[in-house]
Every structure is written in C-alpha cells, then in structure tokens.
Image (tube, rainbow, N blue to C red; front, side, top):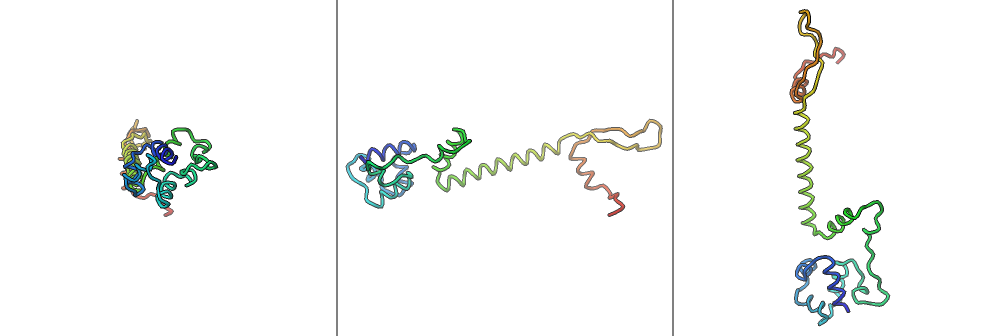
Length: 164
C-alpha cells in the first residue's frame, strides 16, 4: 500500500512527517492520512513525493512491475563507504544548507592558508653570509634568520643586477 511505501521512504531519509511536509510544501495532516492509508494523494502531490524521493509514481503506487530505485551512489567506483555517505548527505541538504556548509569549508581553507603563511614567515632559515670586513678570521659563514626578516631584507635590498 502507498502509505507503507511513503513511511518507509521517509524514515529511510531520517525525516519526521513535519520535516518532509515542509520540504515539499504539503500539509502535515494530509500527509499523515496518506501514511495511514486513510487517503490517497492527488496527482500533483504524488508527483512531488516521487520527485523528492527519486522514485517513479508507479513505485509509490506499488505497481507490481515497478522496481526499487537504484542508488547511483552505491555503484560509484573507487569511492569508500564514508565518501558515499557524504555524497548522500550532501544531496539531502537544501540549497541554504549547502551554501552554509560551503561557507564553513571556505573559512576553514582560508584559516589554514593564513596559518601556513604565518608558519612560513616564522621559520628560521640558515643563510651564508659574506665577510663583513678585511679582518683576519672574518671569512664567509652561515647565520640563522627568521624567514620574515629575510623576506623584508629582500624587498628593501638595492638591485645589484647590472644588466637590468
């Protein structure tokens, strides 16, 4: 019966009847009557439900030749179960939730890039220094400098290229 199919599909998606009705724009009382098999949905509602669940109207109506909908995510090659779950959850999100999720991801990426830039500036680099005077023992040597200081020195250093 259609009510059993509707209830099974709804619970499989983890939705309450109120959540479902809000998502597809139908009245809760009517929908609960469908699940109890007290009423049958009209054509427009049947189409909304079929579209929402990704099934045919024949499947909702329980026609004998209607097949259970195939899960296209289940057949994805080289995708593990956790990734498949992520795809399914993504597809269940409404547009506003997808946007909010992407905004969070963008913030995480931006924060990570900022952190990496700060880390690279705080790194200590060993550089080879030239002798500073003619005094004996003042040969070229190595010294450690923070990357940020080296970057600043490079910006302010005079150009020594004679060809440019």
